[in-house]
Amino acid sequence: MPNIPLTFNEVTPQWLGEVLDTDVVNFESHKIGEGVGIMGDIYRVELDYASNESGLPPSVVVKLPSSFEENRQQGVALGMFEAEVKFYDELGEATGTGLPDIHFAAINSGTAEFVIVMEDLCDLTMVDQASGMSERQALAAVRVLAKIHAAWWEKVQVEELEWIPSMVGPRIEYVDQVLPEIYPAYAATFEPSLPEGGAELLQLFSKSYLKLNTALAERAPWTLAHQDYRVENMLFGNPENDEVTVIDWQGIGRGPGVYDLAYLLGGSMETELRRENERDLVVAYHTELCSNGVEGYSLDSLWADYGFAHLIGGLATSVFAGGTLDLNNERGKELITMMSERHVTAALDHGGTGQIPN
Image (cartoon, rainbow, N blue to C red; front, side, top):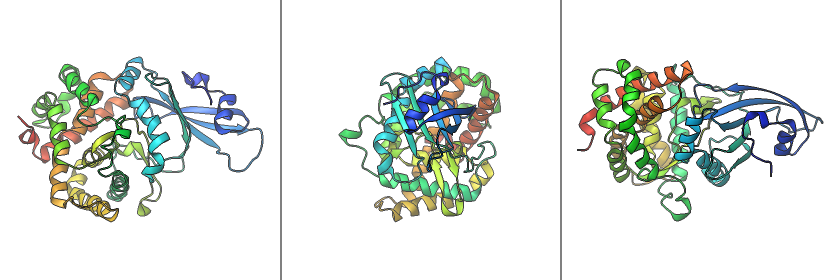
């Protein structure tokens, strides 16, 4: 098996040839996704081969841990690097839709030493999260999400999947402990841009994270959740045919699928467009769940759970990223500011502090 490069400088033609089982004589590369894939460094690699053998990819994408030490430590502490590698190795086939082809994935367990080599999806369309999804892209994204969730619906609470963090497990307990500590650092940079009532909401939220996760976990059905299901973690082919490929599976968890739905619509659509279309999009998600065999989950229950879920994922990502990660990249700061405004507004639209348990 190929070794795991510790930095991109260790990615050589010989190593790529071993991964692809052919003779690579040279390559050109450039870093992509800066300020987007904050926990990982991602490179597009264009390949030159010794032969003209058909079927060889002209390029691949190589994902390595972030070059920032603090980010690597967070990835290890939260089990994110190991989770993504194991997801592709063990769960990708059963998930069955919306995934890239993986050429190689490996990790030295318990460390930040990992690598993923996947197909280059450069022919597909990536949407800037600040611009937001169109209504049609959002519809394609929720339909693909429902198919992924349906494949694992109420099947994840089994011993062989206990390696996947749950919404009431150690990962959530860890975040619950650190959110009150890091909120002041987040507030110093991002609180001034929050809508009215946002600061009060986030201050209370930062002290209630475990309670909120526990409440959602007790009221909504469980499945395999992506937990970072936003538009910059997917690429679109023809949205009219629901052609969506989902990437960045390092945050997977076992818990309510509605978490992903609220996270997507709350953060990846402009606020007014979300308000105009979210009911129809939630209906489309529910319809797709039912079409793929899910039973016993009413639309009314889904809508109520969806509103409650806005109090969790997007708020946590905003505070955690804004308060702890190295955001020297201005693109990263802009992303956190935008995510905060949208997610806080969505949470306020669906009840805000009135929904937070005592």
